Amino acid sequence: MSRDKHIEIALQDAERYARPHMDQGKVATYIPELAKGDPTKLGICIRTPDGEEYCQGDCQTEFSIQSISKTITLILALQTAGYDRVFSKVGMEPTGDAFNSMIRLETLTTHPMNPMINAGAIATTSCCIKGCADPFGAFLSLARTLCGRETIRLNKEVFTSEYQAGGRNRAMAYFMQSENLLEWDAEDVVELYFKMCSINVNVRDLAHYGLVLACNGKDPATGRQLVDPWICRIVKTLMMTCGMYDASGEFAVKVGLPAKSGVGGGILASAEGRMGLATFAPGLDKRGNSIGGWYALEFLSQNLGLHCFSGHTEE
Ligand code: GLN
View 1 (tube, rainbow, N blue to C red):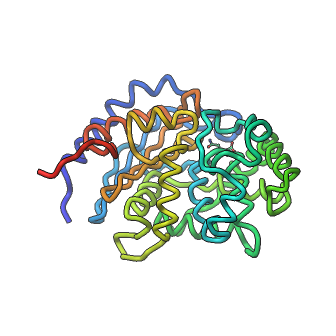
View 2 (view 1 turned 60 degrees about the vertical axis):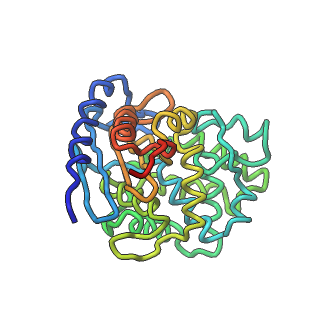
């Protein structure tokens, strides 16, 4: 194993590039506990298949995973309920609407448009419950395996805060229940959804998960196949097309990596066969994406030639 100096320097430069933009960001406040986030924090981590880990800035700081959990929920739903059942409850199309929008639920389709927005994730959450005695236990265990850390836990304060402020998500769940889309009671489904959003992670955990996705579900350190390749392909595709909410198109043009953001300030990204990446900076833009993380990833994509259509040619 050898350290790649180019990556080390790129990370330092990415922090320098991203920091000046961060004061445009605002921490999320609609979940009161998230308002405590420190907008000066910035962490960036890269993990590569040869076992190296590159950390820059606040890499140990824990934050709630929020919407990044939607990717793990989708994996669990596909493992538990299978392709046909999951995609009979949720679509595969980007919305161009805010992550918590409910407008298309009634007007355009009979089911939520994709699993990366709140309504879609609530539908996939319901696919994880049937026949499972402890669905949150199953989710936590999968999250720990994908992130490579057994000590990942629920942040009870964030969970309580989400639970109390969750009227909008409840409204969507009850609406979907009325359309017979949920496989379980709406209240139980949203409670599980809030818990899934409230586990604490750091960028090292998410970079590990991003690397597993980049290696088509295999943990390169152990050689263990953690997720079936067909599931990885679906998750990465939906991250690419829908993972940054109504900025997914712009992110695909500028960064060109499958990625998923959360209002806790995290972004998970995956560079096919090459590395897992993760960023944390709690200041968000209007669409709910971390500003520091976005700029850091834009810099790294250009500097390390990570864009999936970068036209890389063998030398
Ligand atoms: N738990 C958050 C919510 O339901 C997740 C949203 C997000 O990270 N974009 O609103």
